[in-house]
Length: 466
Image 1: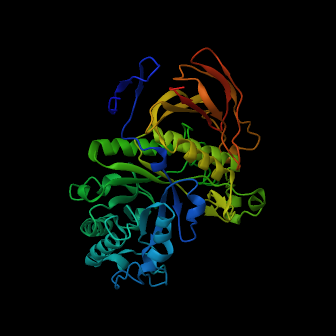
Image 2: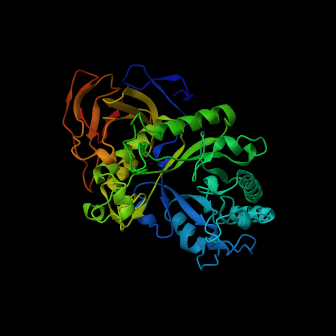
Image 3: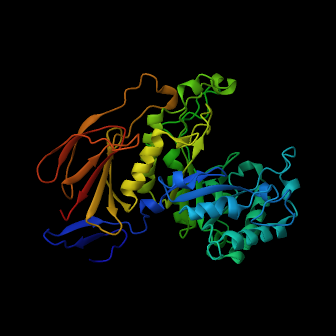
């Protein structure tokens, strides 16, 4: 077999078959190295290992020390937690690769001015970064993490000059502590920042900062733009909605990266959808009731998470982490975004588990069909056996959360042509444990099938050797 080269078509001979060709993006990760989840202290590795092998943790510096400048005692914290014993060690033992997000907030919550907390702590920031890398990095004895984020969502809370100093010092400390640690920016975007997201153009293109990080870090949510202040700012839409900024933010960041920092990876470390029970919705807090905040249905959450992975995989994104692992059925933004509810799997858990188990060894290969509002089909190729091909087909449509009442999900019969082989298996999206649905389909000649495609993705598995 010839080697796969990014951006070209490769010709390969399989015994008993004619010559075949496919395009292969060799920089694309297989899905087991692409799918992640956000966790925290109560994360259960044995439960969530079913859905992914990557986990991101919110590592609070105010757990480690009472104030910046205090003695650094990692992995022991002043609040009694030992990161190695209670968090990162069990996660490692459970088979996870961990990304540590160092949260710089939480100190002196009665003092809004971060300058009073962090000014003059330059050397401490270096020392802390170095200690974290030595303690947790892949070159250490425990090998407890492979990447570290410097900040989560500092946004406008930090003066850019002050934050640049913190980032520079801490990044240099991490580099000196363990050069194998990948360093991430906090949440950024290639447009004007806000209270949570920094403008990547303000700091991270500087020549003195560029060598100090490896990954551009994005948080994206499929938020519907508010038309009036009486509308909820947190209502969401389906992933492919052309009127929202969800995918545009990713594309802008990639374009900025290509122009200014071409060696950096792009990760989406937060994306998600809230889905609570009708009972919880009936008890919405006044704020969410007044603005008519609406979550997704459980089915929509499952559909939109899987489809988000599909459209992220098309792009030059190396990882994507779901927010969140578990929830307590709270009718609020981010309050019902777990794959589990009080650690009981929701439909989204089973749908994501199916994606992970079905395509874990596959990487994105090409877009087969892209007809907005009608049909999307993506092709994936097995990383170790290119004869194994998977197509995923779905209707790129849906209801916005504030418009879902009375919405009739779209379904339409579709003919999929030029299949590389006849399907060995066709699966609908799982929403419960047990066997996945098996949609009816019909063969149409040697290389085409017809089937009904809806808003839940359908998996078509093929093997060119059979």
